[in-house]
Length: 391
Image (tube, rainbow, N blue to C red; front, side, top):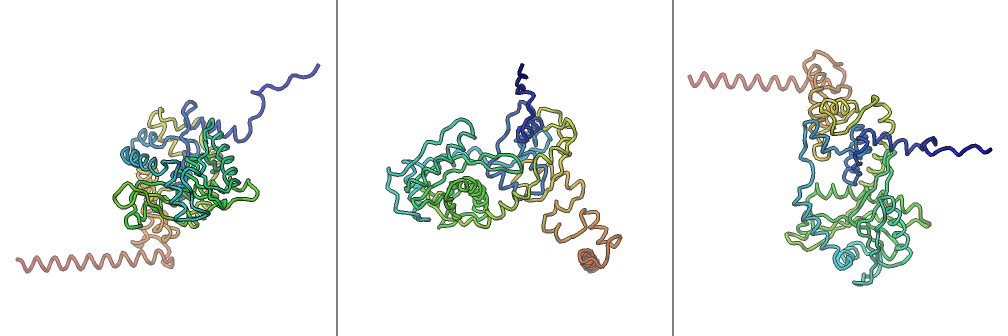
């Protein structure tokens, strides 16, 4: 008599399935995962040493809700008005089958004959679930490359493996040129005045576009021959103070190299999760004390730049200040102080109570402390002289 087939429940889960279950336990079994987006990945790549953010983002934890539960809510995020304005502008840019968007793409980047309105392809990318949409996007990209014409992919879905977790990304658009090249399109609602825009906002858009370009590379690598991913992305913004679109080509080779290197350095999420105490959860419905203990169980690397990129920045800043971490003053200062890792050590070294006098950092601190004492003494003497004259 043949032995019965093993049941599905007795089959050992794959490594990815086991990780998926573990991450679900961390955020709360019935809590849906908050998907990673390019904005989060760009911020994560900018601070690859922060295990706390890597784990929370990898597990799909809602950090905004978590920060509120910890009693440290953050104002980080986009206003509802800006969100609605951005959607309205994007709809205008993509109207009429993306005719204006393709015209801007050709005008700034070339890549073939001028697009004819109504003759460009806009494939339907609808499918079941993010995996299905990513597969449909990959197929549409291959077909568009082979067609030799202009194709606009409106909100395609791309997949990128990040520290052992699959992230699904949705750029505003990807354009396939008649020459077979692929271009990432970023549509933003901040103005481009006299051909230039706010440098900080452009930089953030470039880092975000670099994440999309990196995900596109994964798709292109599966095709033979591999299409060319253009290193110039198209940034589309309102012109001056109007609602008319204009565009600029931005070279993201530097951002792409940095993002590729930083994401490769990220500690694997499963390794971080394996070091947590049994029963750890970030379910925001748990008591604040329990959530605080869970968050503190994961090491963080706080820097002032986190305030503009992470929902937990206020909580982490408070802890960093309480523990006297030098990184709370900035990464550049931390790099200049060598082995001095706390503010207490810095003050002691400056006062001559500790530290190797041959250490350049210690010598500089003591020199700065001496100059400060001289300046204060001089100010005190001047104030005393002024008081005597007044009397």
